[in-house]
Length: 463
Ligand code: CO
Image (cartoon, rainbow, N blue to C red; front, side, top):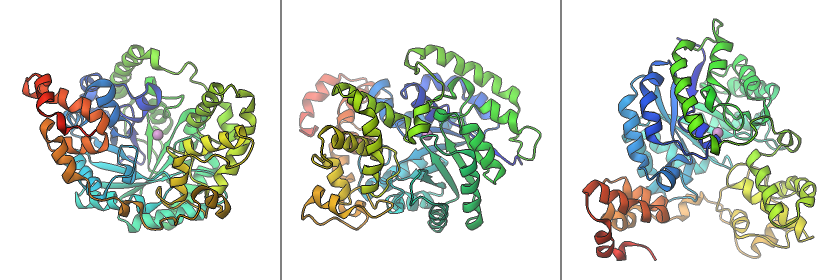
């Protein structure tokens, strides 16, 4: 039994991070048998942004992709990324939607569900976690790593204990920005291991050049699983290279059990895909030194640069970057991951560009201060909250409780185009995309003219 296990991210995070999630199912199918033979613990291959992109850019059914991959993978586990109550979409969904989605994901072949919440508010992962357990799948609960005065080793260890109580089969440390350094990673893994005896999986990005070192330090401290990408889809904003990790650990007490020869055909295949999608690759794959200087995610940094360029205010970049910690503190130190990274960045820019802090507050930030995203890691600044929401009373319950059941209506709405029960989920999560995608799929499956169908069922579209 290998001491360290490898989760390959080429089919999900690696192409999401490097080529805007554009890898198609057709690109994946020819290499799956070789990947299955290679000795990976798991293939991360579904969820995150792949669900939406599949339909939006590739005209593919994500459910069909899952079934096609499942049919070809016998040894490795299939793993997906789920954003708690957000599922794979961009808002909180109702509890019945969350339960139905988990049922169908596991029912169609997912073995391991990695569930996280942007604020680390475990109430937002509660329903999904409960359903994963009910379906008998492997529940991996995941903490969003971030730096702040309230994100201490103790706070992460306490979180891990709560995760165990919720039934977690393993715990993931998600370092979306690549900010976790080797020394801190070792301390973090030890702090969690001291309290919770569950396997720990490390997930990082190479953006700052730290990730391979961080993995090794984490492995020495007791982490059992690491996320890597086959080399043509590794490095830069993606994961550390699989081959290098396998070679680094070979013959040691942490041997992965993977024969590097078996990775050769996998590497060759993805080299071809790298060539195919080279126009989408970032121009420079090296280290982004500004991420190390300002300790914010790469995506957030480039968004800020673009935002300020548009406003002809790039000379204010330094001021805005200095404003980020101020805004973040007032908001109770949210981890900087979608959607909080965009919210904090936008508010910091507004505070600087308007010349007065909190003069303009966007709707999302008001919702945040009203509690609709969940509970921030620390109390928010009361005066700023007052500016944002006035006399309105913030909610203190689990945000999902405020959302009425959605599935019954979605089933009715999707019915004219549905070729499978899963289509109702697609409809409720991505109504705009589904309106375009489902009729096309219906026509393909039923070999019928979609134009006629559209006329007959015009009223099915929400206006
Ligand atoms: Co990632």
